[in-house]
Figure 1 (cartoon, rainbow, N blue to C red):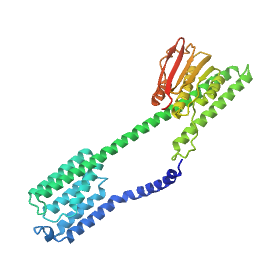
Figure 2 (figure 1 turned 45 degrees about the vertical axis):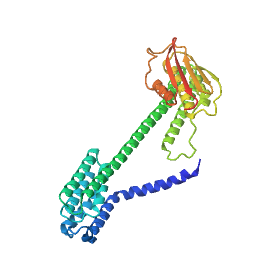
Figure 3 (figure 1 turned 90 degrees about the vertical axis):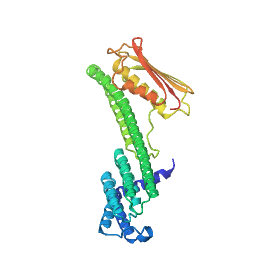
Figure 4 (figure 1 turned 180 degrees about the vertical axis):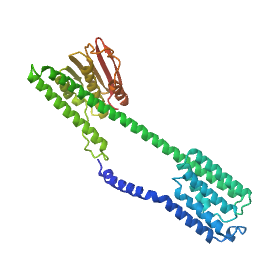
Length: 386
């Protein structure tokens, strides 16, 4: 793994921290600079070179110019109010036959801020108000607003609104993608926690029952049950901590602990056998190099949850697991001869079987389950590449 992303990450965090500190002062500085430049434009431009009919600057024009440009100081916090003050100030300046100067350009920025930080209705209303103002000023005979100037101004307003609307739509789409990713990540975490906790708790519950039953008649067997409980709970804690540790990671530095997969099935079967369920594991074929890690993990979880269901819901003392790996897919079958410990075994209860179906579909595979004679069977087919 290249060290460049890891080296650039602290710089990104540094720039992000600086940006967060500067952000509260950014708009006030924009308003202050805009007011200063607009006032300077009003006071320093020779009106005769623009249009001799324009009036010389006076107090009304200066105050209206400063208020209009200064309203950009709250363009994000109060976009509608900011735009309203801006348009009112610019209308007063231009309508009193004074030079509008930079306000004509800053109005585009104000509309952009309204369209991106306000609601869609506010942005559309702002566009309409801006067009109406230019139309009224043009019809009112403002010296520096000829017909072509009005048409150009209207075209620029529409273009600015369109750009802002496109950026808004893109931002909303990105938020939708983020929300979808967060939802998917929550489901993934829920599946992982369910599989780890449910399997471990089932083994612990069985061993606790066995230990309590034989503690007076067979202390050695009770001690063995306690050993299984201790070992199972310790490994469950380790897996839970591993998952939580991966959630807290900010950088992928190559130290992430490996997840379970097909190679861990013998250890899983040994654990279940220690819980008192005789499991026969039949494997054929070897995992190809292109076997996706997500497929391998899904296969492991399917076997794990299926055996957990046998322990929880079946009165059977044995179960069989068959895993066949080919160049194209991984075929899995877990079954028990039954009978069911409770009625309605074929209907999925809880999130276990539903979670397995989701796992299989997420990697492009399929899963089916249901009654098999007096027992229960789970079959899955997972492609080698997720």
